[in-house]
Amino acid sequence: MNHQPLIHIQIKSEPRIDSRLIADSLGVKHQNTYELIKDYKSDFEQLGIIRFQTGEIKGRGQPGRYAMLNEDQAYLLLTYSRNTAKVRALKVKLVQAFRDARKALESHQTEYLPGYHAMHDELAHLDANSRHIHMNFNRLVNKAVGIGAGERSSLPFPHKSMLVAAQFIAASAAHSASNSKEAYQKAKDALRALVPPAARLVMQEGK
Image (tube, rainbow, N blue to C red; front, side, top):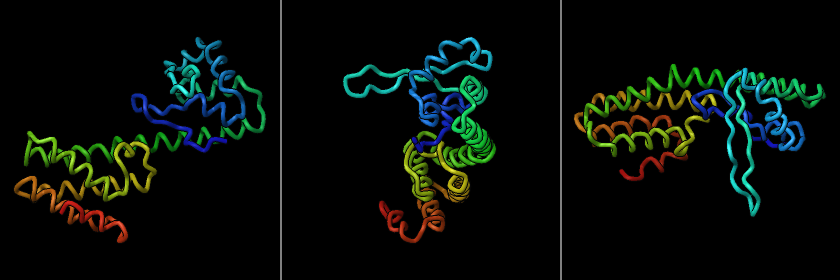
């Protein structure tokens, strides 16, 4: 069974599930699942817009089509399946996964975004015309938390909390600086406390 996360918060900040993952979790061919969604398209559309997507081309075959379903659409799809042990187990996983996705989205909106904007507002006061310092601060925060570019949206709760804290620390450091160079150095020094000892050598790079 595929062990990828079921929920993908990637379309207008709304939790969605890939129809291919539903089919994989049920041990059925995705083409059958996709055709069922198309056959009952009007039913699914009563619960929201269906986001049809085109997958990557594998080998010489044609790119496969799939659907990103919202929570209600995912449950509707399962009601059209036989109530087997696999279907019941997936229903439980979906309830848990969508619950966690809503919590993550709420955390993103109420904790992460205010901290993100606060940090960049402080930088704008120092050097409003330079994108370079903003990018460097984002990299610095990512390094302190131990994540790469593009990984922020999929962080689990512990790492998300560290990210929020790192942004607050960086913003405070920038607030007490007189220029962007000083702000960067102060932020680097302040964020070092968040970094595991084994990874602190990486923070020394570029000093």
